[in-house]
Length: 151
Image (tube, rainbow, N blue to C red; front, side):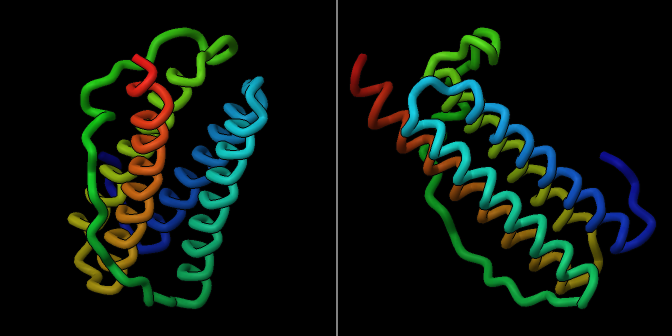
């Protein structure tokens, strides 16, 4: 993992990661033929924009006021493999890719929380990790409802 020399560098890195997630979900939304799924991915893009805005506010104003909570994990993302090209991605493949992306974001924020000595920033990263795990859970539930039950 990258070495950070300041809280600002950590926050900049996290904001960049959130922007990449926004771009990822907007890109998936553009590729979806299913209007409902398109809207789901656009909603996730908006949530990631909210995360980025929260991080920007923290950086600008020094606000560290996020609560940490537990989120259930179905672990579906641990057992499925994404296949196919994003251009012709099936609904199930898009869900798997989104689960993997959220799992990676969870791991990123967990690692960042472990690497900072700043207690308030640690709490922020832990809360963001929880948010990402909630996103993964939403995709896992969708996968469970619409893919696994069809098979």
